[in-house]
Length: 140
Image (cartoon, rainbow, N blue to C red; front, top):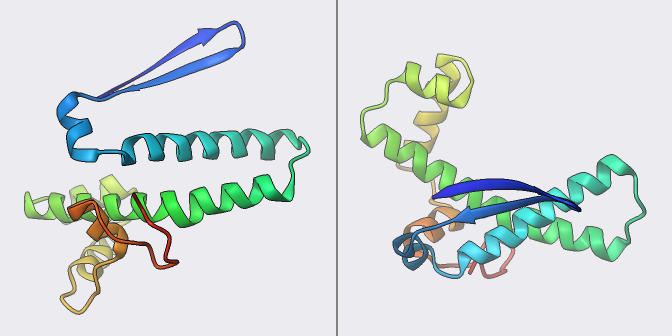
């Protein structure tokens, strides 16, 4: 995967390049997540500029980010943390990666690996490409 940016006369063009194998593994979620990231950047610019934005537009932002993108990103984060632990990452390495103290990283790791903890829909989506998020909105 590669990300490139290029200045244009009207702004900046951002390109995310994925291999065919990556697209085969990710499926349609790649385009959906790119659209949602676009929504996040658009909203950030609107919030900083104070430009008038309709309630309907803000509802789209809230849905795209809060009910679609965030469950996916959280699932990816949790699964990546599990993968790091499986690969033998130390508490110190995990703390540096999380930008937190060693004890906080240890607590987060323990919570994530707790056998009583229920796997989230976002984590299942990462593993299987599947289910709905807690609000009942399809993640794919």
